[in-house]
Image (cartoon, rainbow, N blue to C red; front, side, top):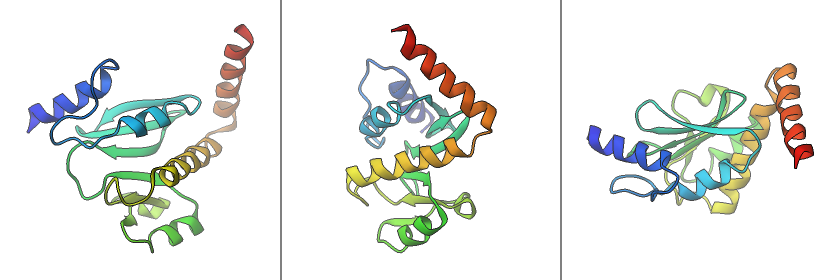
Length: 148
């Protein structure tokens, strides 16, 4: 099993390689989407989770091995209450008290809706960063744009 964990992790960190191995969920589309969000980073955490962060704080967690849930993300309080009433959407394990929802499978919601929810999660987490961190990230982005 450890070898499969490593294969999934290596596949995700090798940008030239395929992103689907036996036993891994297909996260390539999610990964491509998340990495288009400004200052978004990714890392393998907890052995088998692909974690997306902004300013060092996570906004989405995709599980690479079969698990209770496929993807977890932050929501607003009302949005959380509405989402967990839907089939295939549950309170995220360990994170529900912070209004994180989770999809039981990749097919729980249509891709465009998942992208919208992940973007909203990113925005909520970015808005919760210290003002100094937000300003630094915005300045870094502006600096890159002006150099082009």
